[in-house]
Length: 211
Image (tube, rainbow, N blue to C red):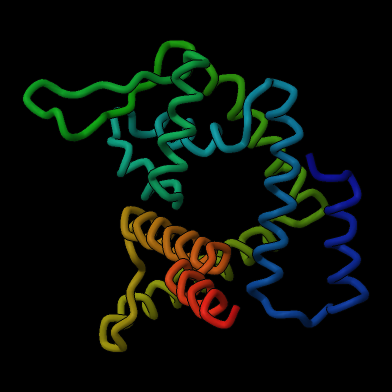
């Protein structure tokens, strides 16, 4: 669990150390502060933030596939698989194959998982209220307008990315790349650690002749 001082350190960074740091960092740090505040409250209900990320999606749209959940949550499929296994063990969700489709696994909330919505959503609403405490209604409106404007600009940039041959890989492709990179690194490490058996044999032979 993060230290209670972590968010205070973030605030000091912006107030003193680097008040003109990049806007992207400011948005990220604000998000981190929101997440920490919610994590503390979820912990009191014995719910992890990772599980919350999937629960809030399923409360809106139940029965998504594991891949769809990964895309909605912005995480790789192996991460989703591990989280869903844990959530299934806790009785929050159940995974099913639909009749006639053995390929896709669909995820459904159990009554226990659905009941958590009434308990956890108020915690998120409380964190949002705390986050804007001291701000006027007009300032909140401006903040929303600014953030939506940023998202709109970046969405336009993403739409034009194809012209520059830029794209965001799928979670499956990212997972494959990570696995391949790990395999290459493991292979390189094995080659470095293992002796050159052919070279070693040749050296022994030469050494024997010299003797």
